[in-house]
Length: 120
Image 1 (spheres, rainbow, N blue to C red):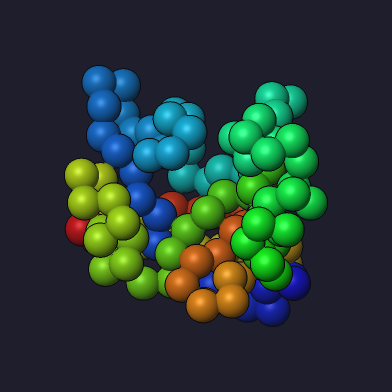
Image 2 (image 1 turned 45 degrees about the horizontal axis):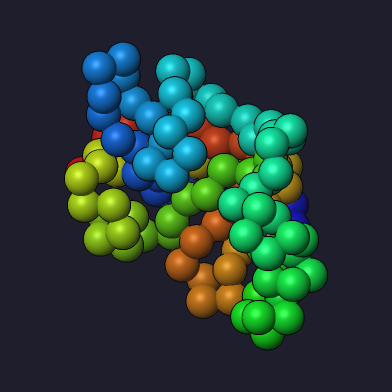
């Protein structure tokens, strides 16, 4: 999908000696706007199961949106519950940005993200 307007969302980041890092991949975040990048390394799912199709066989209709997207939450409390040791930032997926939403409508995966402020 493409965002028809700015979408408010929440990103958990872990504080370390050099600022903030993403809690799963450990990527350093130093800008107010970040963009998803294509990663050359195979994903954890590729290493474990060989390829995404096998993951879909195991989990039914699950579709993985991983490489090149930034994962965020629709609710700041869900983000904090998932990553209790992290700070939670209010963010915006800018209008016109490609994004996906999960079937439970709790998480989003976006190609671009603008940080607004720390909220938790």
